[in-house]
Picture 1 (spheres, rainbow, N blue to C red):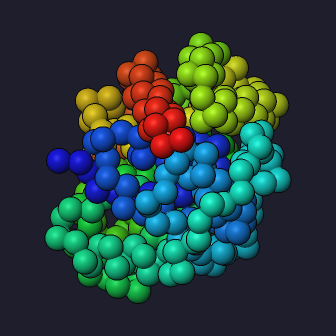
Picture 2 (picture 1 turned 180 degrees about the horizontal axis):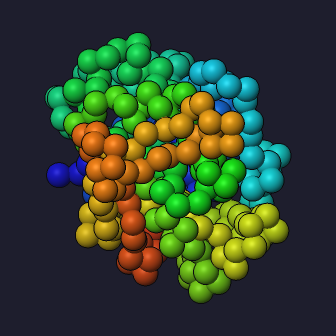
Length: 319
Ligand code: BDR
Ligand code: CA
C-alpha cells in the first residue's frame, strides 16, 4: 500500500524535487502540500509550490499556506542559496488553481484526525513551525501520526552556523518541541546524510535528456542550485536534501539509520539550533530519533529521475 504523506515544505529547489518524487512515485500517496516560511517568505514559497504543481501537472493535491514567521525568533530567509524568489533559475509558470483556503496547520490536523490512526506520515522539509503549531493546537495528532521523517539538523557540522543546519536554526524553538514531542517514530535526515545526495553533472544531464518541459524545469532548478552551492559553500555539485526523506519512505533499504537521543539547543549563544545527537547514551535519556547516516546515491537518483519521467509522460498524455 502506498504511504500516505503530508509534505510540509518551503520550496526551495530541493523541496521542489521532494514534491516531484512524492507526486511521481506510486509508492506515495501525497495527501497535501503545506507550506511554511523558510527559504523565503511564506507567500513566495507558496507561490513556488503552485508553480511546481502547474509545471508538473499536480492538479489534485491540496496546497495550503502555513506559518509566516517562526514561533519566537526573528524571521531569516535564505536568498543566498535559493534566490530572491526562493526558486530562482527556471521561469515560474503562473498558478493554475486556487490555494486551499485553510491554514496549513488546520489541513494537517484535519487530515490526521480524519484518517485511521497510524496511517499518515509527516514529511517536514522546512522549518518546523507548522508541525509545532499543529501538535500544540491538537495534541492528539502525536499519537495518531505514523512517522515524522524530517530534513533538518546534523550530528556533524551545520550549514547556517558551524553548529546548526538551516531548517532547525530558522525556528529552533519549534524544532525543540517537535524532537521532544513523543511521536511514535521520528527520523532525522540531517546534512550528514543529505550531503551524500549530490546532483552531479551526469545526473543533471540525464534529467535534461528527458526532453520534457518538466525535465527542462528541473534542469534549470539544479543549475541555479549548483551555482549558489558552489559560490557559497564550495560544493562541486549541489546536495539535494529534501527528497531524501521521500525516497526513504518509498524504499527504506536506500538509507542507513542509527537510533539516538536528539535534542535541540535553544539557549546557546554560538550553538543556537544545534541538533545535539547522543548515539552513546551519554545523557542517559531515552532514544527519540532514528538518525540517517548514509544513502545509496545511485538508487536515489534512479527513483527521482523515474518520477520526473513519469510525471512528464502523464502530462503529455493529458495534452
Ligand atoms: C535545508 O535548508 C534549505 O535550504 C533546503 O531546502 C533544505 O531543506 C538544508 O539545510
Ligand atoms: Ca527545504
